[in-house]
Amino acid sequence: MDGRVRGRFPPMIAAVGLAMALALPAWANGAGGTGDLTPLPAQAWHAGHAAHLLERAGFGGTPDEIERLAALGLEGAVRHLVYFEGVPDDAAMPGFDHSGVFDPGLDPFPPSRPATTELAKADGEALGIKVKAGGNRPIQPVVNAFFYWLRASRLETDRVAQWWAGRMLATPRPLQEKAALFWHGHFATNEDKVRDYRKMLEQVELFQARGLGDFHALLVAVAKDPAMLAFLDAGINVKGSPNENFAREIMELFTMGPGNYTETDIREGARAFTGWNFRGMDFAFNPEDHDEGEKSFLGRTGPLDGEDVIAVIMEQDATARFVASKLYRYFVRDDLDPALAEELGARLRELDFEIAPFLAMLFTSRDFYAPASVGTRIKGPVELVVSTYRKLGLEELPGVPDFNVVTGSLGQHLLHPPTVAGWSHGRSWVTPGLLFERGNFVLDVVFPDIAFVPPDRYPPYGGGILAVHERLRSGMDITAATKPVGVDTGEDSMAASNLLADRDEAFNTRYGSYRGWQMAIERVKPIPRHTARVDLAGMVRGAGLKNSREVVDYLAGRFLSVGPDEAALQRLSELLASELGTDDIETAQTWLEEPLRIVLHALLSLPEYQLG
Image 1 (cartoon, one colour):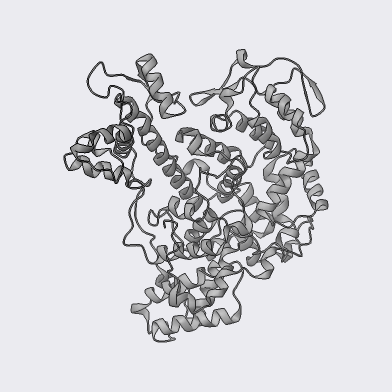
Image 2: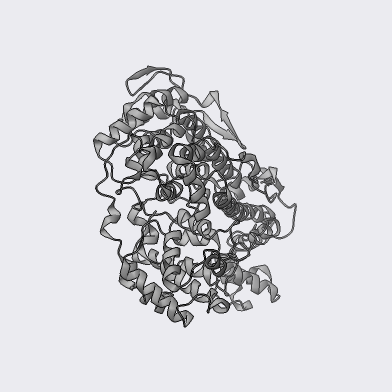
């Protein structure tokens, strides 16, 4: 998966109607919900409700998992998913396996390559590496180290995302990971700016540990989290020159929403957070940078500090309404009228902002199981990929196709949200081009790409690094090898080389970029690269299915929250019978697998599969 529309839908998708793959059905808007938060009667509970609950409070499941959840009854199923009753301790899930890529001298990491080389020139040292006493390019080792950490942190961050997705797939506590995914989009930070996988990992672990607890405590923890402090420029928020980034975002995006504060509140809030910073992996308060003067914030006046400001924010009705509404839209449906938003805010406040009981209330409500709520939420890329693997019955995340490349091409690269506002949701996930990519993902699972190249072993940022690599391997010196692609490498163009590639003879930036990548792949552990262990023939045999229509009905029931119409099911059945050469499953036992994969690809490319 590399972002191309590869046109890999041909006869199999034509058989079920390409037009269906380019437009969602009208009922996907989720209109007509009741908004009734009273509990669903226990006798109304059934396996379909269990499947819906597992889809929203997790990432879906197999028929056996749904059957076990249904057997618990409504109350038991909700307590199982929300409070982990009867679930093994989370300690059984493996923690992240660090590659050991961080060196103490890298901290604090300079903001840019020019800042790094200027520091090296001024101090004779940077990133824990001394400038060479003589010889050519004396600052080159420092430049190499700068690019090494950029590459290594990025690669290790992708390993964190792979590890996290593996937990989503295998965990017996799916809501813990689903809630962490929600908070990652809510309190969005991006490794491209943080540039330290350790901080990104620590933030994910914070969401996993506290995502279902007290929102006030979570908000304070996030405000003191090194990833958030780095992402929203805490280091330049100092007395006399406050930076307003965090003060603005904590109100606009994290708690109250637009229109519930003034520009004065932003300025005064920024003053309250002055002095908040981090040192290494820990929160650090610098008293000399803190403004101890009086501030007026949301009607409260005094020598307020950051925690005081957060406490005032938590007192606002807008905060309960905003947070409750956002949780509702994520776990229930987008359709939310003002009266229901007010009621949800009141419920969250009554529960002292405890997230688990609030979600339990939602998951037991009539509204959650109303027709307008079931099968009307468009699955985000991470949900789509993980739920596909779960419904296939996989127990570990495949390395082919690459999880980060797939989800990135679909619009959601974990730990790389596009802005501090996180990702857009809903119909933004399903443009025509993205629908093709979703189908390509399924194709890459059932028919693995034999041209797959591991992106963590291959430079993803163009041909420049590879050009340098090939030139050096051919025997060129650094100056000639690092000329931009297309520039003559002969001796008669040496002056041009110096101008374009070696403006500062103290170092060579293009060589540093190349060497940094080389150093990174020496130390970053590779992502395991097995393909998905798919056995559709075994799945069909285990279900005792006799003919193509029974198979199609079974697969639709297993993978889709909303069934296709009869015409689509019939076309899929005819497609399977055609590929098998018979309608009798028993007769086709020895060649069953490939036709099943063709039909599954067609089924999971339908618009209904995008809904959960």
